[in-house]
Length: 275
Ligand code: DGL
Image (cartoon, rainbow, N blue to C red; front, side, top):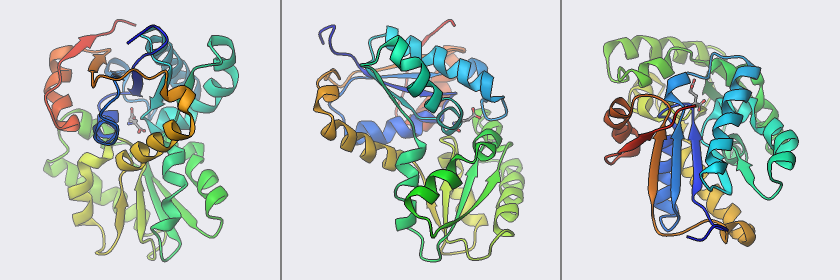
């Protein structure tokens, strides 16, 4: 790696982005990656626009200082509340040559291909749902699709605290599933609009009516990143190769390593980042 090259940065408020990184490294194994989980300040989903924006910008700048030219926000809440401001207001001042990509667009540009009933549901954090990012973005690509949203504020704490397979999880999964499905009985496709939620997919499928398709974002984000790098060879040339994976957490590393392997699918050894 020379100084004109650097790893691809992948950011999330905590562990959830590891479900995305897992798919990205399957699709693009040749690149080096740095993952940063802001576990010390998670969850983001219940925080204000200002707070999520400041936390996200701070983490993106750390990833830039670590040499990343390209950063993926593998967090819906950060993508909904901070991405546009960072792209439009901050990047021109920080370094107009660097790029930050989000996770909402790779999902919204394909979701209509999965739905026959044209009734799509979205589960997300309170912040993502309140931002209206999904209905606004889906309307641009699929104006005939009706979007129904449900905020699930208890799901990220269940996942972050390793309770995603417990009886308590069943209670809160059933509660939010009912609150979504009562909005339209014809919903046939549901976006897991939070990168923590794939860990709940098994239980979710059991609580949903048969035939409902659950869309996880990891594979969609990976395909979209591969396409982006193909369309932007100048950025691909700045991404170092060698298959390196480095993990940073803003919280305790031993706890992170114990949990992270579940999300990433292989053992993880992290480094502490003091903010
Ligand atoms: N994983 C993040 C998302 O995709 C947010 C979780 C949180 O910190 O609330 O929205």
